[in-house]
Image (tube, rainbow, N blue to C red; front, side):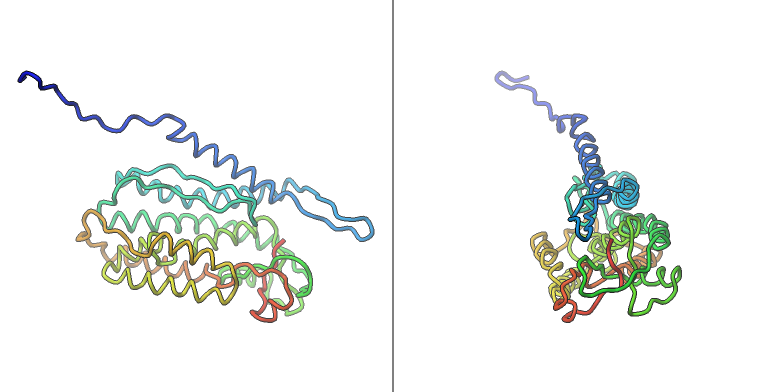
Length: 312
């Protein structure tokens, strides 16, 4: 070795600790489980002449927790296992606890390596929503079976949930046609199924780096950006149905509408994946609802119409 020269070793990234590999994920999962359980088990009960009380139904909380976490976990693990299959570095799911309608804002995984080709991109993108949808189907069936037919009062307090096509079909199959004087009051499993279908539809919107954006880029690479732009403007137009879409449209704008290329975009996806993409489109249609949450304001009801599905 020449004088004044020193050997140089190229080292990879330092090994991640157990906390970095799975500790944070487990902690967030447990916090989300507690958050969903508390939201599902607590209910405000008004007794005429005696005031308002906070009551707990732990069975209801457990059913909501099992339904919501089962659907979200299957969705994210579909992505994660597909990443593992193709050797793409990805984290375990991160769950987001939040005191919302179901006690969470969902979950996500972080992909830390480029996608090798469009076949891998397609499989990673579509595996999540299809896995979550499969788990949501039995939850939906059980949720509709436990739902109660209740009088419909547009002047009453509460939250009305817009019902996607699949929810309508299963409700009609189980309970038959409903008159205009009644609606369907769902319990914890029904709420979990509705949330699962809603999350599935949101992720399948063909915009940017959503799951639907991955599928669109893999199958229709040359037209993906235009489809993404049109999809974003459709989200803006959906604000007409309610303010729920404002945050979503802003978030999609911030995240971007252009999908990055894979390492080898020349690899074709093949006809079998095109057929799966068509199936994913059908799943999106039957799960999507333009007015997901309608608060029981009489004037607002008169302006945009009424959902047929009442929340608990």
